[in-house]
Figure 1 (tube, one colour):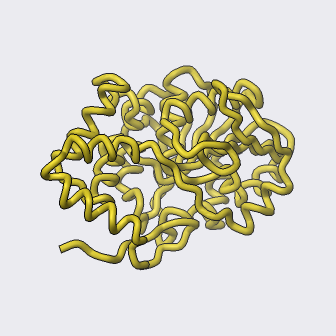
Figure 2: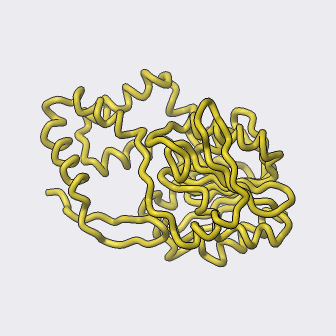
Figure 3: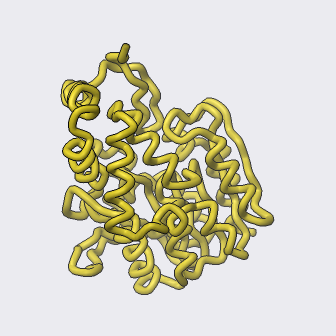
Length: 293
């Protein structure tokens, strides 16, 4: 039996809400048609995998972006929105899937007050950057381009999927001296499993989705984008924070990343979930102190 309710985690609030009608319909299609036509439904899942979703911007996010020095950077023909606050060594904020650069809002005042320049970007298909789909590789190219224009990047603070993107970018030459990852996923397998569970995909449909991803990005895709694998090659100080009540990315994911990254400090918080951890005063204090070294 399927549940008609789900835990919705966004902007730091975790509540039980009825499933959106569209999602309920998609679940029904996957569960009923998937076993009969796994190829067809797998191709649909493949298209859905790259789709992004824009959530309403928070009031604090709007205030922060209105105070930012805003610019647009062309990356492989895509105009991406860039935000900057303050002066000094650059601290780059990297948002997660369906996030936006203004989620850096709570970090701006503490970091600029400590003498840093905070830079954030809306990835393709996110925030004020156009489009409705993207890939990890496209997002990593954006980070490398922003670092080239705004850098050198002294430190980076990532949230959720942004940690996987940064790890890949650093593995491929992006220089950052200190890294903070908040609620990072450990590997692509976890993200695919979560996606399949959300849509209630039969195993055969999930297999088609994986196959099509490997056909497009090569058979070693899982290994190439694994956060665990990519951070294991890095030799920079890192801090990882993850909340034990995270309903989107379980804290064990962050712990796996920390275990693979030599010398990394891991902090497990409580009662903050996946979003509110970005605004928690103790989190902010720990991040600023770590970046200050």
